Length: 627
Ligand code: SF4
Ligand code: MSK
Image (tube, rainbow, N blue to C red):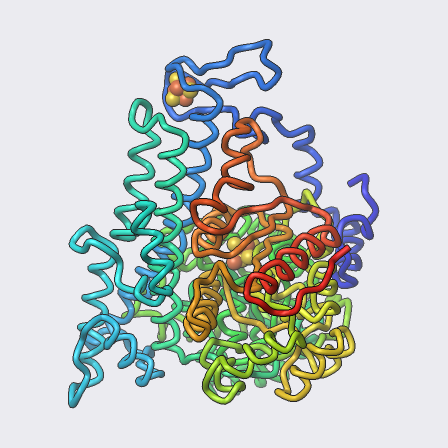
């Protein structure tokens, strides 16, 4: 690795662990990134196509080489097809995650999921009512079964529209209808996206992009929203909870177990097993003080939000955390789990367990979790983790953990405000809070780790902008100390006053990647309270370090829902200026919001602040000049 650690990550634990990894001769994501340079310029611009076997093809961006693929597709068509397929993959990932939860809900209703239960009965009933299911004097498990059945209907083609888009403001739904992007069925939109991008189907770059929008909306207001709601029903709707973040959450004198991935179906059962008094006693009999469960990425966020389980790191920290030598076992479910992790673990005593029938990894032991066996399997494997404690070698835990508060579901935020969004709106109207921004998404080795998240968030809160965050961005800001009682020192005077009065930090952790839908629901509540559309509000979104196809789907549904969204890394679209113009300008006329791309977080903050002040002026509120 030719770069200095400080050029790779701003985090202290990351820098210290990079040094340790080098000493241990580990190959990390940054080594592999460097070995890929220079990356393919055609692919970076979205100009390569391998959709069919007449290809692969590429279009020369300088006009000297070929301008069309073998089939005749030009740059616009190729870029649009590639982008559409990214959205389809992202939407499929979130939505399949949602489907897995619905299957657990159905199994609970049938009494076939020992260990799982309905935790939030009130939410079960209110969501069931949204689906038109009567709940008066009805058995809870019957309601759960009926809801699971109705939600399964949202995935298919039986309906004209998916159910939960009813949560969007009326005016937004009318706009979707007019533009022709109302999502009909969750799987249907992904399937149609894949169909349209087959060779010789949809060759209108603009109509392809409209389908990409409809597909992303089927994720945001469909698959992801179902994932979040069913998770709340099964495991509890988050409330503010104390937690800690960074690699210092590992404990040298405990059995350390990590969960990594996205779906709480497995990690909730691991948590219960780690709390089992018999297994804890077993750990003590092996010389440990107890069992310490910590999270990585979004399955970690799910546990953090509901139970305060500590967070060891975000996406790019997942290899390095194993190099602490302190991890007895790591459970992987799916999404964002680098295939390199099993190889890294071979250098230490860490046992690596893959848990999903649809996610296999090299050098991991595969133990499939299903609703009927999850509880017992979790206990069996956690006992094995305990047995592995005695195989530990040298342990290096580089830092002390950073305290943080998580658990800000919409219900918790409205609860803190006294049950309605009015106090937040009053603070916005009074200009004490200028607006709110959702900072979301991943890490990406193309950019300095956590630099974009931390500097963007810092800049926003010091300018009186409330930040809500999710995913790996939320982990970055927790590690940076933006989510504890000391964090108000970073906030501007107005934000400090309001958050201080409410007893909340200036950056509110709203959960995992699928939980971005909580931001949609909150934005809808604010818009409804003001009698306007989401696009009129002083809101924005940002994904400063995104890497995944899921992030593309999230960005597209955010913009399609009326939220101006600033991306850090450029998506692979620059091969088509038509598409760049549509996404960064044209969409404003169609959907009232656009994308912008700005990798520098200070400049991104300026773009966002200008946007927020413009929206304030549009609402007749005081507006500041932003320079
Ligand atoms: Fe080439 Fe067209 Fe086939 Fe793509 S779809 S690989 S551009 S022939
Ligand atoms: S885990 S999608 S790296 S946020 Fe949700 Fe993090 Fe991005 Fe995966």
